[in-house]
Length: 436
Ligand code: HSO
Ligand code: ZN
Image 1 (cartoon, rainbow, N blue to C red):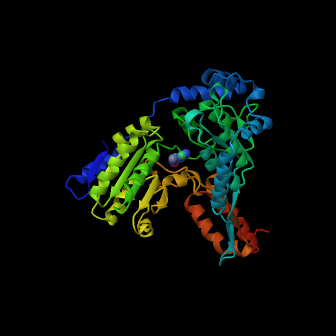
Image 2 (image 1 turned 135 degrees about the vertical axis):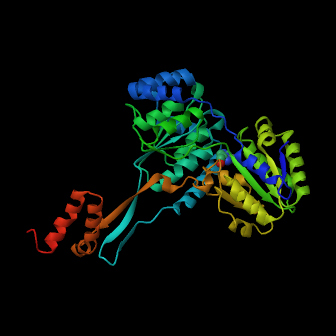
Image 3 (image 1 turned 45 degrees about the horizontal axis):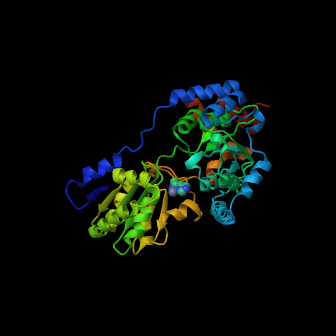
């Protein structure tokens, strides 16, 4: 059974806080193993990659076969059925159109002192996208990671994907193609992250690593952070649905299950202003769980971490939602726009009953790599900006230096940094005709 909470009852606050604080992820401590793997790849390069891939993926490679050739990728892409190809192409086009609008503008202006100031954006030179193997290898995630990088103008886009026993999902390779990926390597785990961060004879290093992965990949990303940039360490998926009684309980049940089926540690929460409706949704979830293909995952997620919360009104729903700060927020109420306007903390909002969260996972346009574990309080989903950085620009005219330089000199003196002050003073003296 999921938890049933009622915000109108005494004792609610304590139960709600317990829900907020519930620890869902029990990441195994793999840091020592990961440290050893990274050290090995740094020391032995390709040789270590070949050995570790034989050990973990039961695949014998050589440095020459670490990368897929273009012909191999072509052959896999040709295996993709037409309907899947068309769907992936539509998704790629829509995601690209959305992310095109995120390209930031350079700025430049001259202020009243005569100083010309501004900034300029530029892409990172090379980005590496980690794609998990096996069950969790989602082609949609390849698009969501690679397209923002492509839009940012990243010059070199690299994918690593483990291929256990040599098996790869052809859709992953097609997605990489559609998103303009330049190189694809058959490596995974901490060794792939190490290769991307430090480089080997075959895999040239990148500047930024993004993409989901298991505990080993997450630990490796944490370790190489600083040497390279990383996106985020994503936790298990979450959905919060706010729904009024004028919804089909079965629709809402499916929406809750859509994230529960990702992971036993995923969390699905319903907030409603109608207790009977909440009960009806819970019954619909149970009914669906009888036959759902992934009931072995969705069932434990719903029963261990699922919750149905009854509230006084939608204003209270919005308040609680902001405290939860969910990854995905679905608003199935009469005036969904008005409710959306009240929300501040959510990774992505899906407005109205005709917008199931799954649209956002695949085809809507916004990114599906989103902040989990309440981190939407302070962070955002993956975007074009994650693959860009900003360089500030300043140009002083002699008059500008004359106007603002003396204050710099004063501050330099107050910090006892003589050379700082001197670098300004020498120029000011020249301006004043002294020190010639
Ligand atoms: N909802 C997941 C992403 C995903 N769903 C991929 C389907 N495929 C995390 O936001
Ligand atoms: Zn999903």
